[in-house]
Image 1 (spheres, one colour):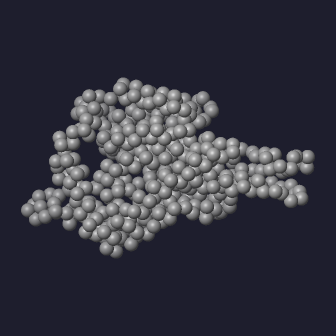
Image 2: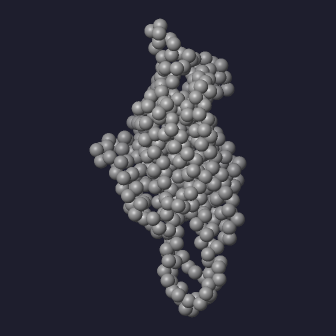
Length: 452
């Protein structure tokens, strides 16, 4: 039998000894490959587009880290088309939905209310799609998915810690509002998506120092969630907690309950009376401006449905919801009487896409999230039934599902359809599914009889 050294899916297979047993199970594997330049570029890109580190530390701004990381990452990925990094391994329903969404956004430009805005949004979305491919394609093993997931969690903790230290809350300013790039509501959704990822590292990694730091990070995120004062963020966190308690089957029930107790302790120790007054308005919506004001969410959503009915195929154009508010909405007529009209956002990512890209665009957007969750669910089930069970892979799949649940609930109250938060999480989901398929293929290859 021929002796060889093969690199399969980022794992190096040692040459076979003549004295070794002639069974596939006897083949030993070395540890997965470590960090390389491509993975480092992807990590920098996540740190800048999700964690906004260049805005937290302005000394980084002249270096253009996001642009350089993206440019170098794309070049390296094109040069490394082998093994798990082959682009064809990204074929999936999620990738198809994302490409369809980009195409439909491009088709909306000619008939957009403002073609300049629509073209800019489509260009930005194209960049996100390209980096989605680079991120998911750069992954070679489960360890790589863990590394990039850890980057997402760490930069979220860093962002939260910095704004908590720099924006003091006192008197009427009891909540975080205008921050770096994000506002308080955006931050709350980002935190909700990062919490289950931090929980994964607390429960998975064996090094006590890393687990302890991850636990500290979770406390920082919990404090940031409270200080944001976001009702949408509160609901997003409730959805994450419910998912962890009911669906995170790879974690013992006692650990899940212990985590819930820790969260409750942090919330009770850091929340104020004003925060709970804000949260109680969820139960009493009739007393809130979102139901009474023309600029509130309910009236805005009604107008958004009207834009969708008006242009059900291609919508008003990518990024043009605020333009519709100021030009074709019923409120726009007030400008004839000298009354100003707010060109506001949709405050709902699904309605944002439906109004701007029509019903087909909305279906593609929903399909993007749904297919990512379904692929993660499939990975979690297959990993648990494998022999031997891949507990870490299953747990990471369920943690990413919880992150997507948190983002989806938070984004229901915000205009986040084209932000990098979503496309980073979706890329991690596709990357994990790719690795899971590769492991199944590798296992089936090992079970085939060898020829002398």
